[in-house]
Image: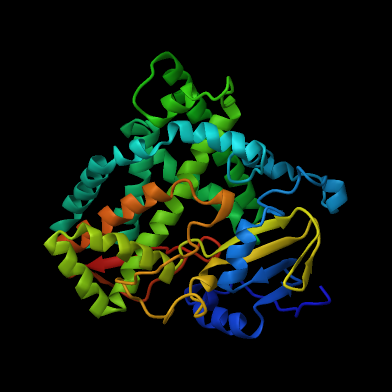
Amino acid sequence: MDSLPEIHLNLNDPDFVYDPYPRLAELREATPAFYDPVWNKVFFTRYEDIAGLLRDKRLGRSILHVLSRDELGWPPPNPLTRDFDHFQENHILDNEPPKHTRLKGLFLKAFTPARVEGLRGKIQSIVNALLDRAEDRGRMDLLHDYAEPLPVAVIAELLGVPEEDRHLLRPWSAKIVKLYELGYTDEQAREANQAVVEFSRYIQALAEDRRKHPRDDLISALVQAEEAGDKLTEDELVANCILLLNAGHEATVNSTTAGVLALQRHPEQKKLAVEAAKAGHGEFFKGAVEELLRYDTPLPMFERWVLYDLEWKGIPLRRGQEIALLYASGNRDPRKFSHPDTLDLTRADNPHLTFGLGIHYCIGAPLARLELQTSFQTLLRRLPNLAVVEPVEYTGGFVIRGHKAMPVEF
């Protein structure tokens, strides 16, 4: 890329993963766009560019509907990820119109606002049960005892996965999402592919049961969803159920642990939140959750393919090229947010990038918001003296930036 500075951003460097914000601020000011020859991607760091590119229909989450592997100069498909690749081809996130439009329309026939709102009481019950188990102990691992089981239980409830099978979901998802990091190993590829195979078989069996014995759950609704005579194929139904778990719980888990850590490091903000929780001020937590999602972005980077040649602010982007959008950087851009490095739970104007923009805006955002608002309000009301035992370790990747564990005392 002759017109852009060449910089390698080591996304897997432990120091960068632990605290990426100083380096992102340097890049945002000095080189808002740059080409990384190691990752072979053009990176964008400023809010205005990221927001604009997310809305630009000349970019997409997939490319093979526009160019063949030969035209892209890609090697043949990796046999280690055959089933994973098939899963990718059939879910909403990695498709473009017209297929994306069709899939999204059918999925939203079943995944309605009323269905999400109907989970409110169940979410509160799950949160209460998790805290009941921990409250008398005076300590827990916030990640494994609270942040992880909550969204898995909620999505299992939404889909209609029986209680006795729910322990299967998190391990499958944890293996699958490794392939969204840059630089995964062959062993991780094998494990992810096998997880897709096992998860798919499980959803297929569940869907077959719901065809015969419908219930009030999302899988039953997806089986029945129809628009203009069109229905989801079995592969599409399976892929989107798997996507819902992967996307729906990874972000929520990371938001919970990152949010608790941010509150600990900003005691005056934590005090505000605890007071609001004790007073039952649910409205406070609507804004507070948006700020926690902005301040420490749970999924800090997303990628797009250039579908057609274009020029973006003087930067030529060629068909078949890949760009990386650093949400975590855009969410701290002072051109968009006043005092962006300050956590302000009362921030009024907060158009953060965390759920994306454009046609690929996260369809699970309403559920994630409901979970996080309930989770933080109840956690801080019941455990106001919650304290993280630092330092905490991260899992090793930036793209899905999560913690290995988070011991807390209360």
